[in-house]
Image (cartoon, helix red, strand yellow):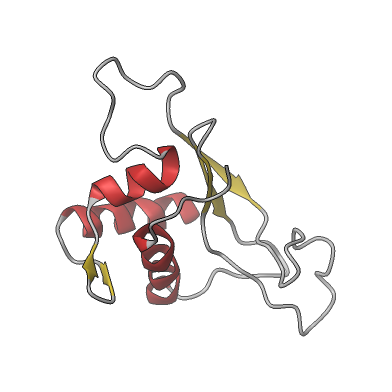
Length: 121
């Protein structure tokens, strides 16, 4: 489900329908978030970019299994990246934590990909 939504999001970015504040999002913003590079190097990436599906994070940064039973736990579905390994981490739904509605999820993606800094390094 997360993969299908991410593909839909990428298509919206590619067609110019996503922005965050004044910043109009482009595919290079997603690539830069993931790899630290706004375009593919001439000789390609040393490590091919990839996606991993992870447990959502709770308010204290732990994965959701730590506080799944706590009703007040704030769960985040914001993507992160490991720029050294070119890995995009997309939080997935669990039995305890369902994905937010598509537009809310896309707003989280907009915010993440529009920032001038990267995910985790």
